[in-house]
Image (cartoon, rainbow over all chains, first blue to last red):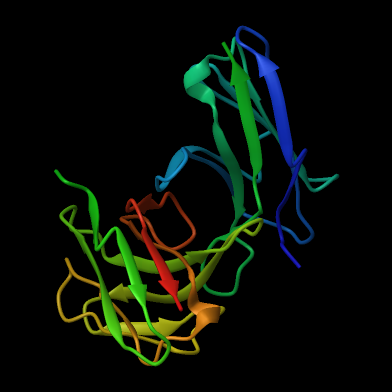
Length: 110
Length: 113
């Protein structure tokens, strides 16, 4: 089973609204990362949050991490049509490399 | 910098054929990885390398082979293609390590008939 599981699987919002997606994981981590994938493209790193951090910001992105609940959330504020993409969380609990979830598909309607 | 480049973008193979997916990076990254992405699933690690001359198996290595003769290049070989290898393949590199920020290539979409 996937270490990181994103929720919801799909999300559709209007431009200007906020988008929140969640990631749950099963075992302890040192860091958790979020990536974006536009249709037909490779993944792009968005943000890394370490296990001793609770919140991190990058532009319109806010990531929170709750290690007691083994969960993280990614908030995109004031969303734009260009934010339409799939978003993946990745944890460092794999034996050899990052373990990716199956992603949240975000559709931002103009 | 071109970043991570992959060729070809698309490929169709018949069952039993072999081919090599090319991956190159110009960022002098020591760490490189190959992942496959199947519909509705996250990326799964095939093989990885922590430097020139050093490779190791990932989560789903069967049917694939890799080598790392230079820092820049990390080709993935399909030995005898099977329909189960139909997937999108991504190469990634990192300066910090396999558990840190990864730079991904644009992917190769492979169909095996």
